[in-house]
Amino acid sequence: MSSTEAPERFEYLQSLVTEFQDTDSEEAKEQVLANLANFAYDPKNMEYLRELQVPDLFLDMLTEENENFVEFGMGGLCNLSMDPKCREVILQSGGISLVTNCLSNRREETVLSAVTTLMNLATPATRPQISGPGILQCMLRFSLAESPRLRNLAAVFLQDCCSEEQVRQAQQQTEGQQTAVGIPLPKE
Image 1 (cartoon, rainbow, N blue to C red):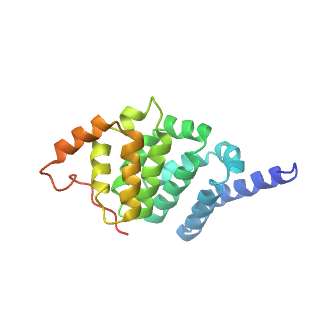
Image 2 (cartoon, rainbow, N blue to C red):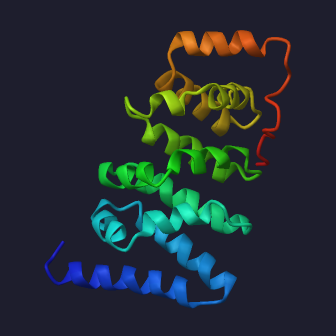
Image 3 (cartoon, helix red, strand yellow):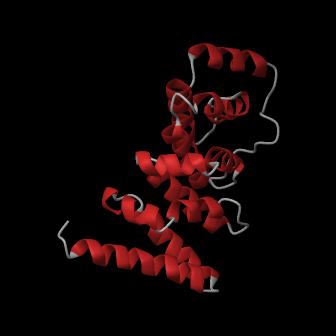
């Protein structure tokens, strides 16, 4: 990145955050969130996005009623969670519980981003919370989903974030139960 490109990039990202804060239009806010989520995919933007408190903005979107806000916020967090410093911001802001709540979202994209984000947030310190019984039951249910994307991602989660013993115990607990109570499968 050239020395002239860096300030322009920061100023542009800053203008997006300002537009989000200043506009009353839901449609404009959705567009800005989608753009910020896309910019969160580029490692060159991570420092700027942290400085502009975009991880907190995305976390705030997870409790909104507007499903597009939730989807774009979750997608942005998914992209940011790959960066160690952003991961720390997300964890310090109580991100695990907010992301976990998105596992029950009706939109498959939101659920896929939530599962991926949880995988990215898994550290030795967070693994007990991320592989807790409720999430484990949810992943077992997702591993039986019709959607190949959700089914395969849940299988990767179970393999990478849980011990074989945890999975075995959870499977024994669910024998005879047809669904994890209260967690509907997302619509494709």
